Image (tube, rainbow, N blue to C red):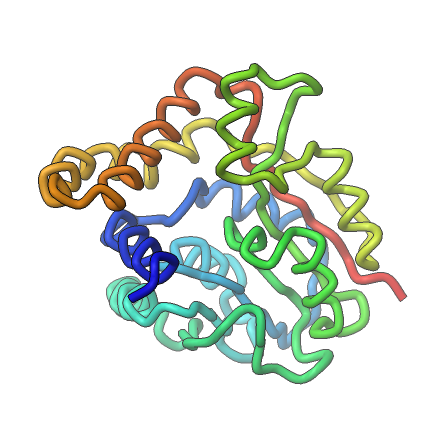
Length: 257
């Protein structure tokens, strides 16, 4: 196994069992959906990089009978889809969600297949601008897209936070830049908002932080894994110190002609 593959295995182990693989909350999902306005009857929706799918289930509950077919919930990793299937079964949402294993960089759908494309915390994998450009052809006329992106909220971030994200996410930009990227990809901006601080903690950082002692013990003799766990701890500390400097922002747009 090469270093990149090994790092990703460690990442999956660190994330395993968490309710979410990034910041988010049901309230933010519903708020973003409301920004889409009136949606077509017999709606067709896709959730890209769905992970364990808490947001997918929130969408399913909100859209209900408006869905013409189950939400296509796509993720590359089968264990997340297994978790999603179990959660849907427990909440009686089986008929409204269709988990699908696949690569977000090679989506297996025809053009104009969807009225709504959703993605929480996953667009960065392709690149924020690149993701919108790739998704646009899959939307029908007037279709909507909604995605969250890690974003600077201040013009001059604290040096410590800036240095951390230069190393961890060098493509991170400010709100104005991301809005411009959305428009350049062929979308009218319907709205944007910053997720509340609680969206970082309740289903993500709090359970992740609780895992760190066991992870440190498990990887005590593994330098690569130990460094990865230390980075996760440092990421949590950055959030504690600088919650007003950056955040996850929901960006919502409608496909233009």
